[in-house]
Image 1 (cartoon, one colour):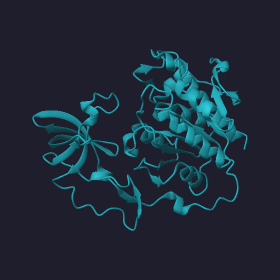
Image 2: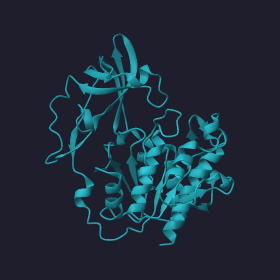
Image 3: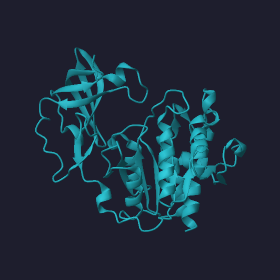
Image 4: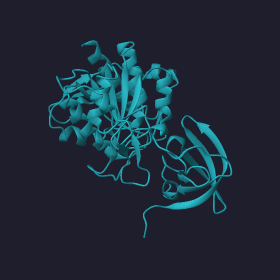
Length: 340
C-alpha cells in the first residue's frame, strides 16, 4: 500500500491567481479543481498531462479541497533548480529542491535582538495583527515568518500577497518545512534572527500558513507550532507577544472563549510571555504567570479596511471575539515597538 494518492489527469482550464495556477484537471473523466505552484513544478498549459495528488479533495478537506500538481509530464521535466543553491527544502522527498537560506547572510549572535515578535496560531489572525500593528506603530517594517502547522507553500497565501501590496508586511520568509516565500530559512530562529538583523525588520509576526492540522487533542494540532516559535523568539531576546485564539461564535466548546490551542501553549511555555487580550475578554482564563496586556481594538475600522474578515466560515458579526483578540495582538505589538 502507498500513502500517496497520485492520479494522471489532463489540464482542461487554467487561470493565474497570485503565484498559483488555478486549474481544472480531468482525472478519469471527472473534472476536478486543482492548483499548480509554478515556482516548484514549472509552467503549465491547457492540454498538459499531469500527475496530481488527490488526497485533500478525496478526504473533503475544507481548506484543501483541490488536487495539487505533483509533476507536469508534458513540459515540467527539464527544470534546472536554483543556481548554486545547496540547502534542501522538503528534503528527502520527491519534491526536494535547493534554496539559498537567509541565515547565510545574517550576522553572528552577538547580543539580544530586543525587537518584538507576535506569535500567532492561525493564519486567519495574520491580517488583523498586521493591520492593527501598522495603525499602532506607523510605518514600522514588520515581516512575516511562515512556520509549520498549516499550508507549507508560501504561494498559497493570497492574504500575504495582499498585505505585501498594501505595505502592511515588508517581507515574507518561509521557514523550516515551509517553502516558496521571498526568502527561505532553515529554522524559525534563523528566520527571526535574519529578519530582525539582515533584512532590517522592526518587528516580526510568526505563525503557520493557511489551514491548520488538527486532531481535536491538546497536543495534536498545528497551532502548537506557536510553542516552539515563542521559545525561539524568547531565546533571541525578543519581547514575545502571544496572540490568543479566542472565539465567541465557534460551536465547539474547546474553542469558546480562550481556545484550548492557546491555553495549551501558555501552559507549556518555559518562560512568561506577553499575552495580548481585548478589553472584552475574560483575563482570568489566561493560565500561568504571563503578563496580560490589553490592546486597543478597532473592529469597525478593520471591517472597513477590506481585508479578510472571515474565520472558519464565520464573519465578524458571527465571531467578533476572534477578530478582537487578533486585533489586540497587533495593537500590543505596535505598543512594544513604540516603547523601543
